[in-house]
Length: 343
Image (cartoon, rainbow, N blue to C red):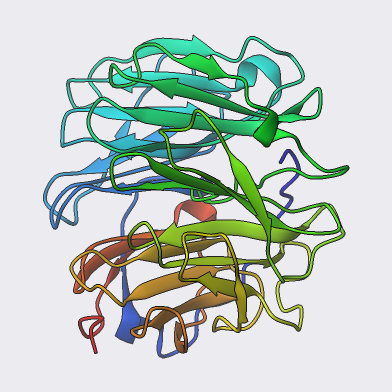
């Protein structure tokens, strides 16, 4: 979704923030929204002004130049390893683009530019090194989906009646996690803006889709579901809120145990706007959620939540229960420094 005006919403970090997250020097001051954690030492991040960052030692971040992308907003990034990554520009029309590198960011190739001036891409995700999916806001009443089978070098459009949008419905390019995948062919994306937020699911690699309503407040352009995370094909969490009202009261999440066919309301902590929820690799029941309201965690598959801290962030990712990163406003990069996220 096109508008995400977040200036002025960044609060000072509380005194206990160091207990959960340790700040790292990013080398930039731009808004960071994309994050791909490859392993305990390798991670990539992305953001405004064509910014891409990479660490290969778990702490030293290098700012990488993407020629021709200086004005783009890279709101999502996916990395296969320390050398191979795909950065997605989000914006109207040809501001939505995909760039690829296979040499650690030394060179980049423009793979595809959004061919529709009315389009706006929101997120990318990959099942493996070759098979991936690209997702964007509705054009002519349908959400835009493309798939790749060659690691993002080429993308094919999907046309399915199940992608039809409700009036006012869109997605939020806030964290790169409004679209997620699991297993060999499951995919989900989350929406907002309309009277009813929904989660769409595909079981066949993005070719066909079915939507289910989620009992979280929406009905306004800035409100709804911003993220969805699945630990497997059945158990998942959706989270959101209102990016214009960070501390809005009310239920800000939901959970499913049937792959997204039905959802139960859940209060994700901290209460308020959550732009991301992700499963923690290596801990079957652990999830972390975060946003401008702070970050929190669950170790019982999303049934109950505890606060990590109140530092505003945009997205998080974990390589293990003890290793993860968060990125956010003004070039913020933090590494997880708390206790392992296990029961």
